[in-house]
Image: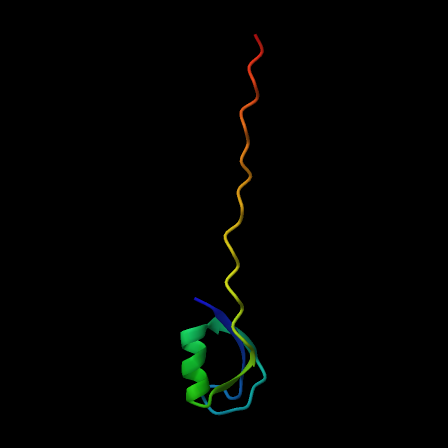
Length: 62
């Protein structure tokens, strides 16, 4: 799931607002289609999973 930054154009009671929201893409799409908000930033690409450092066991001393 991507996050999209949007600007809410109006509140529930119709007053204008400039709130910037970061929402899941499917919710943001719905707000944009209804004219409640407009997108200001494209979806962020998913960050790749963090690389885990492989630690090799230290050699045992005889």
